[in-house]
Length: 375
Image (cartoon, rainbow, N blue to C red; front, side, top):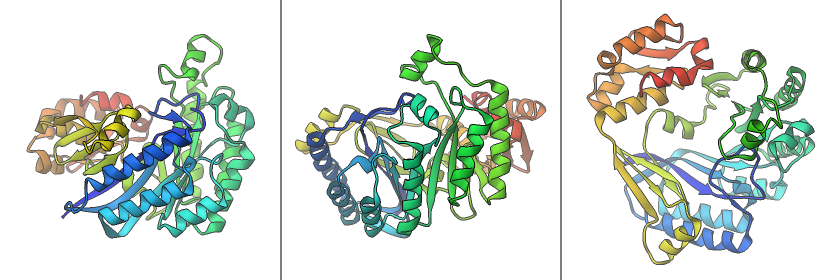
């Protein structure tokens, strides 16, 4: 039986954040109901297949925007369509502006055992720059409510590098979150994605990016502070208490199999990757006609697979075993990339122990430069 991770894409938002380039649509209750019916049809296409689900992740978009009835229907369909691992990790992403105690209690009743809260900041000016729909007070209230409802596995997303953000304002956000003792934190540097409103404001000189020196100072201090709370980095942007690493995301970083459902969702099974149509209306219409929404498929060659395993695996603290890559692909990456690896070691970006390569502290800051060596 093939153990896989399950990703469910909920592509709706009240409004799109100004930095976001993810595939999403504005809230439309009629479309949400049609989409939910279509998603259930796609899930049922996998009835009686030989998959054991080890993790489920409801992401978006904003999954917590859905009516509780829709979430319940989706979850029950998953339970009725797949075999589930006894130690199932089940995550839902929530936005503080669209979640309340009633929803959180329902999620827990349905067997969802991990909450990921997109707080980003608790400073009002920073939230405004990002285009978030919630206040700092609402963000902390959502975290408090999740704790009071009884969730013991909670991730908090934060963003640094926001225009006008200071070291002091970052410390305030970080300390207020840490006082509540989350088990996992995802800490991302702000990216200016082409086409987003924030990117357009940047190139028109309406906002000024944070200095590189301050970003590095925040990055280094954050790691030190989180470690004092028992949150150890295990992926470039992710920190967890022992045993609370996100098993769903580890599936991606370790190059293991996953199934994606919903528009634009990707799947990887063995060496085959495929994706669904990004067009939500086409997605609904195809499933209404009993057809698969899959529109693209590729079979990865052994060298392509090997490169991917290195690039994804290097994001992790554990790094990459070159012997494991050879075992899985038949490609001797240690020989093919020997010069690249030695060069990165000489630059202080990688270190090698036995057959395993890992990022150094400096390598974490310059990860993209490291990854480029393996394309």
